Length: 220
Image (tube, rainbow, N blue to C red; front, top):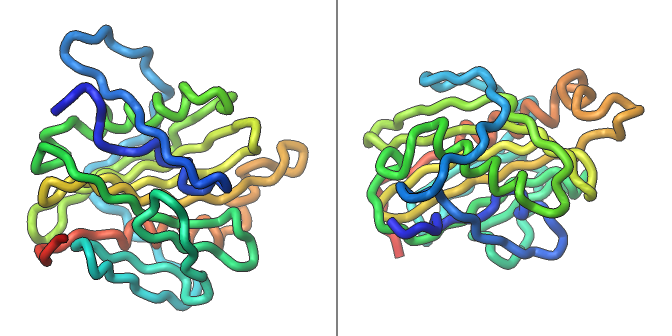
């Protein structure tokens, strides 16, 4: 694989300008990057239940599915294969990007920790990022043997503080990145802790991210 990961900086999915930036991956000749804050990891899928009725999205162009709350609306965004938003709070969204790659599995690209570090380093290196903290990471394997990596992290930027969830996998020589985002309250109002306390928004995002899966269907 080339020294550029064939992917996208994930939290750009929620940006209004619709720009998606590529980010560098470490090669064997590069110096090791500074480790990012660690977080609990798991190798088994954790079940999250949505707090409201959901709708399933099945791509007609690529072999993936996921479920989002039924009241969410599908919108168009440059660079996204699909994007849904919460109509009551447009900053809460979930989107998927699909890109061709030269490897067959996310395991060929890196471990859960290595890929997570690349994702967070990409965010950390943005001019707008002030701080970033990994909340959790885990891996799961589906019925057809595809490995998926799930990440949750908190980012504070000049655009405000957000909780970001990513699911990353490679299947059929395509890189799939699901990005879900929710805006947090101002620090003086409790910051992202209000998402944890209020429950529904974050639980629905976690359930949606965990529902993402790839299958052995045809691709275009």
